[in-house]
Image 1 (cartoon, rainbow, N blue to C red):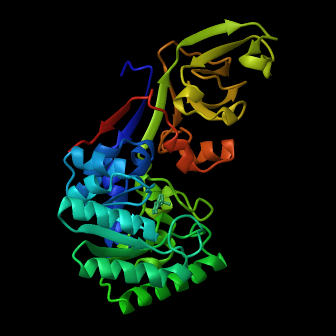
Image 2 (image 1 turned 90 degrees about the vertical axis):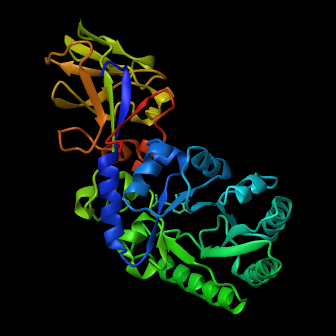
Image 3 (image 1 turned 30 degrees about the vertical axis):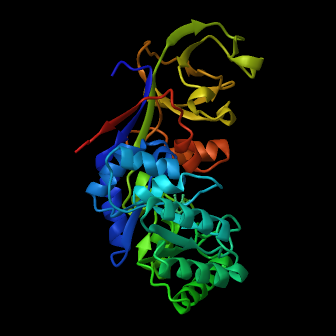
Length: 376
Ligand SMILES: *Cc1c(COP(=O)(O)O)cnc(C)c1O
């Protein structure tokens, strides 16, 4: 491949991950979370592959993402959850997208949109079980469920789901987990008392799919694990959970040259060559999503060995010191991949940069082409 750089997206691995995750929650429906361009992996191809592997539902954050799935021909259940006033409620109602409502203002807007569209909206109600983002506070839940039930009786909405999101599911011993499950169960009871009959009740993200069977309910909602990244790296890597990383980020060396000792490398001369050596230039930088925090610490496989980025990551490029080793312009540098060819993983990058692997893959920029393999 003669691209400057590309992210190879292994859709066979993604399908395998969906199958592995479905086996962890065999009684529950499966929602493939494909928000944020499928965590950087390309939303539409990943959504198609997930559906092929048995994901009945697709989940995204914004209504624009949901509408883009429909525009690409993905039908079937789609849920979105991040709304602001004046959002494209009517387009979503007309497209049969499930919309999430956490407050009365949003219910009012969706009822108005359904009235204008002349068909009922599919609405899922969200309770704030403790995360403190969206979701109705427990004190406001009876009023929200009663209003939703009234709108349902009036034929404006159909309440298809009730859901919540954990704050600390990636720390399986955390006391908040039991507390949030209790809030969720109470909210489900109150919704039933209000006369609501949701098809799906759900709270499980990737860590809960893997470690909390009691949280599986009617549907599970994994994201990062589907991309082959462990959501609980302290408990095990992807292979320990039957998962395989989907993204491999590579670039081709843009320059290889000998330099004398004492030569500065990149802005600020944070790295100075300890002796005569060979420098290789990797044409990816923070403009492509390589964290600037990886300066002097990010790992990369070049000429058969792990190297550490020499000096600062710039907008478009960074440098590695090959020491006495040999490489040619055009040779491949692997930033991260599954790890079984000796390359670093996204988790290695996360550790080097003080972040989580979610961010490493999701931040890969639009300038990096995604090359999907295993397209059905
Ligand atoms: C992102 C997200 C998920 C998926 O989380 P993972 O930890 O990637 O599995 C599930 N539900 C909601 C509401 C989300 O925002």
